[in-house]
Image 1 (cartoon, rainbow, N blue to C red):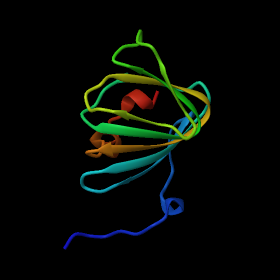
Image 2 (image 1 turned 60 degrees about the vertical axis):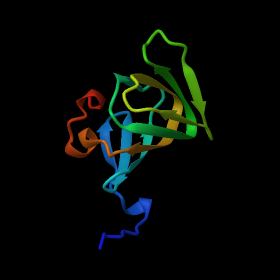
Image 3 (image 1 turned 30 degrees about the vertical axis):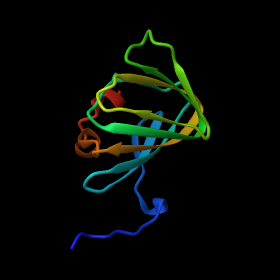
Length: 121
């Protein structure tokens, strides 16, 4: 029988990834959900991954560039979401204090094993 877990976000440890980014991670075998907080002006560099990504903005605005830094940006505002297919390069700029929730399938192995160095600078 598969393990069933019930818990609360308050019980999940918050990781300080860098001075401008904090996150709380939960995951199962096939899905990962991460609640994150960013300071104004933080940039997630252009990157891609095999994981399908859904980003929901709970506070602030995230400006995304998809496929290249020269593409027309897409602003995802409070209450909005964006779905990014796996393999699509993307970059993000936090506008204002941002709180958001990302969902990935499958889970981001680089975030679980600590090899997500592109965020830790």
